[in-house]
Length: 166
Image (cartoon, rainbow, N blue to C red; front, top):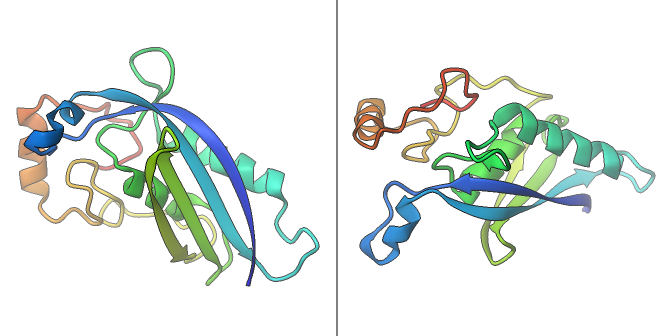
């Protein structure tokens, strides 16, 4: 199998509302430079998918799916994990049916996650029930009423036009 890949970095903020006691500091919003590496299967070696086009498309996904942080710089990734960010990137990239893709996302290039998937169809619009819940991290949300209650308890009130379901 032949693949191509692109890398890019995004300044962002996130938090982990369910952080355990030994990592309690992660409950608070904190900043990282998120390192992305997106890899895509190609069928031939003559620029079937142009690197620069793939990178542009990845950056468009970041711009379309995530709002600017309240700090005036960086993206607000809410309570999304590296796994969530990688999965959402793959869900939002154009691809041919069955094309193998992977996305790695790390925090500051130190710790991260890798998600591999086969694409479904070009730019498939996901219903809110298919997308990742930004509170519990499951797709679809396993318990919407509990997540909504938890969000209210933690004063977690994202803007209504945010592109990630809550």
